[in-house]
Structure formats: C-alpha cells, structure tokens
Length: 169
Image 1: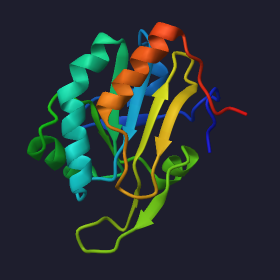
Image 2 (image 1 turned 180 degrees about the vertical axis):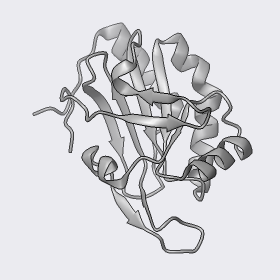
Image 3 (image 1 turned 45 degrees about the vertical axis):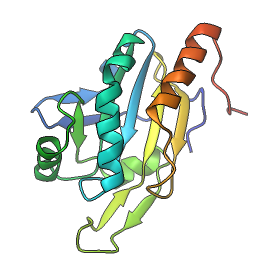
C-alpha cells in the first residue's frame, strides 16, 4: 500500500495512439490523475471512463493531467477506445499485474469467458508534482467508485484551502 505523501512507483505505459506515457515526464500545474480500470469487459468502467471524458475539460482547467490504464492487450484497448466515448482520454494498456500490485491494487481472476484470466480492480490516484500520492481510492469490487463531480469538488477545496494530503500516519 502506498500511503499519501509517499512517492509512487514508476509508471510507463503504451497508449492506443502509438505513443508512450510516463509518469516521471508529467509536468502538471497541480496534479496528475491516474485511473486504473478493469478493462473492456467491465460495463462499470465504460460508464466511469465516459464520465471522465465528459469532465476532462474541468480537470484540464484545474491543471490536472489525466491517464486511464488497464492490463488489457493492445487490441482490446484499441477496441475500447473505438467503441467507448473516450476519444480525448490518454488510454494506456498492458500494465503488468505485478506493477498493479506495487500500486496496491486488488487483483481478480476471471469468473466468466468475457474476462481476462487476471486483471486489476479499480483505483484512482491523484499524484502531486513531486510524484507523491496525494489522494487515492482503491476498490476490491467494480462498485462504489467516487464520482468525478465529487473528485472535482474535492480538488477545488484542496486548491482553494491549500489542504494537505491526509492518511500518511
């Protein structure tokens, strides 16, 4: 488990657009938001990523870089990108399960033919400019994810009040 105010593991992923995204290369005005999602098989992920697409400009206005990433293969990730309404989200793929474990994500095994053999459960990380965890939300199930409206409201409070990261003790 990575505690708030601790440096995150390195994160480097391939994107569906053919480029590479690396956390250490990010230079946001305020934060980087990394959204780990279960994969193309997950209808809750589809709703969450499409909500993120609708709120993307609000994150950008607040100086926040965004990435969504799964363990899906390149082909599945490209299908996800084409079939879901997420054209402006940098979409990463192929994150190894071992790296997901380093982030403290829960790992699940397939319970149907529609799911990959192994995949990680959802996680949302808000990472500061020093690549330290500021805020994290990790689930062991596909349900109960924070809404992006609530996340944005929290970020507004954080930025206005200079509120520190909590949960580090």
